[in-house]
Image (cartoon, rainbow, N blue to C red; front, top):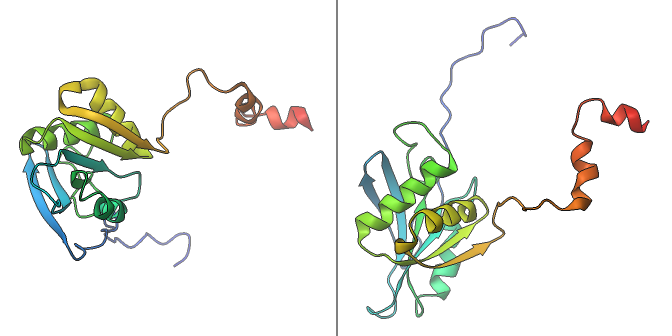
Length: 176
């Protein structure tokens, strides 16, 4: 194909699905207003365990939490969600992938399941989603556990300023 040819149309999936359900896991689809979410779960060791919800990071899926959920079956009744457009969840109906939209999907999932308040786990972008959920709906959250959350530092680290300045157009010429 030359640079003057029109590109061939192709379809690209919104994301690469995660692993199908592993032994001992169940993968189900939950239909909510504006979202269809894939939810991975593992039967807890006891029926009286508190609920937990695991939220993956950017480019991840509920499969990212499979090993941890297996280790916690005697502590929590865990579920992991594929955020809209990730893993086995189709894109959101409105096409919005913002943190606010993902948080809305998580809130709707917790409400629909009647499992709240939950122990909410979040990794990377899922950590940012989890903090939004906890801030907006503290009634749905028992605890928040963040693993390398994608959160801004306030105030910013002073040592990051020189690196940030290098991103400004023309600044590198000044250093030369």
